[in-house]
Amino acid sequence: MAAARDKAATLASAAGVALGPVVHIEDTDPDGDHPVMYRMASTAADSGSMNFAPGQLTLTASVTLGFSISR
Image 1 (cartoon, rainbow, N blue to C red):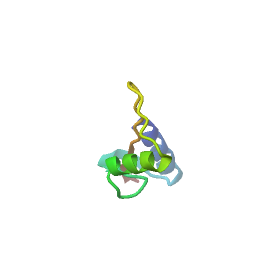
Image 2 (cartoon, one colour):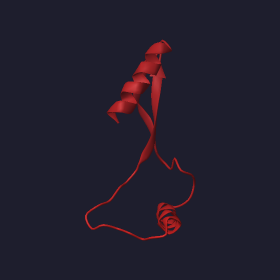
Image 3 (tube, helix red, strand yellow):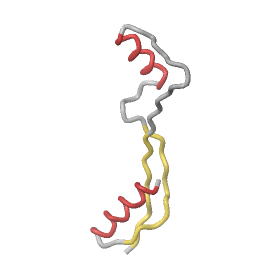
Image 4 (tube, rainbow, N blue to C red):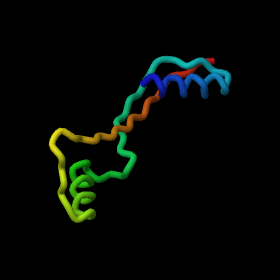
């Protein structure tokens, strides 16, 4: 969230406007519209194994933020 606000503030400053509060938050899927479990299953099937190590988990998240702006 902090990185998104910093980037938005930089862009707003370059455009000569002030950054306002967040007005929109959307959880997005950068890899397409397939359900997460489908992608995980197809990736494991494509590699030829279902090797899951206890205690290890990799998660990826992508969020789109919309900020208000003013002059």
